[in-house]
Length: 327
Image (tube, rainbow, N blue to C red):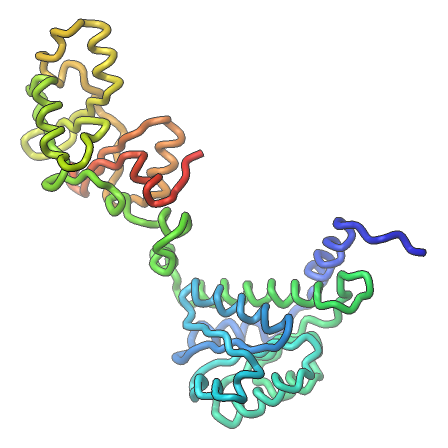
């Protein structure tokens, strides 16, 4: 009896199939079609290939391509109405002979829909019906019997993701465009402007105090301006033009009290503030703020506009509030 295959050997079978993929002649043309199509991209398949197709469509949509998944069986029960002339259909079938997928290709060809086939067999019925054929050749399935769709679905998934990535690049997707499609979660939160999650903003909840302000008075001003929010963990010091000159943190207060005693409450805040503190440009993203918080173990970052005027203060808790964890 043969030794049972290990996790590593099954993974290696799939990795070997990816390394051994042939050059696919129509691949670049398929990228162009997806990138320049004025219609929608409709991805269809059945069984495991259909599940891969659903994931491919989701990846395309997240990268700015107007893509939708259509179940090949449901297409013949009303979902054909989703397809229009000028659309592009990406049809998935490992063997290229799945009846519903082939029938769908023939129907769509009559409707003037551009057809891209993703299959192993360049001579299959599906390939013969398509305008462009992405044929990856025979693969060895990574299961004990060599039957269950495993390696084939891995190959199709990788090729689908590659299509999506390259087509979105050719279409001109920018990081800002990607983040616009991911406004929630750690991916999207990292792409927000650093001012968006900031609770403390000049004119709303953040006071800017002059350098001559006594420390105790600066605390009172900061507390009153922040209400009903809690006072921020730092006081922002600025000149008459609203330009940042310093930051006074609770740590600065502790050090001043230890060095000079309670009389320090009445000293000008400029005497004990941190001059030239780290700051964020308003155009910077939350992910850049996250990196600064982590690298320097700080809790507050002033935000300035293009002219150096303070517009807000980002607190480390603002990142926690949008579910962006810090390491």
